[in-house]
Length: 75
Image (cartoon, rainbow, N blue to C red):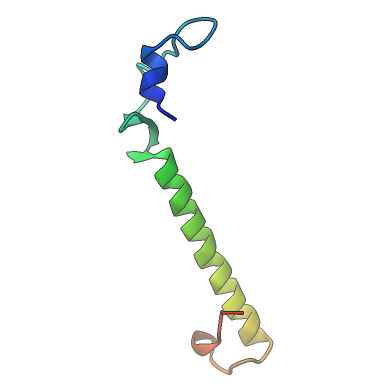
């Protein structure tokens, strides 16, 4: 979403959105210097790594391989 545009063009019944105090990065809302769409990608990647680790541990606990580090984590 172009948050900067919401502060420039009246699009709501009350006029524009007050974005003066909001952190923006490339016209998008930012958190810790990252655009929101970048944070979503990072969160998805982090979740994927966690799921991979859990799958590997489950395979190891099920006896698929005697070493945790070599137990498969794919389907």
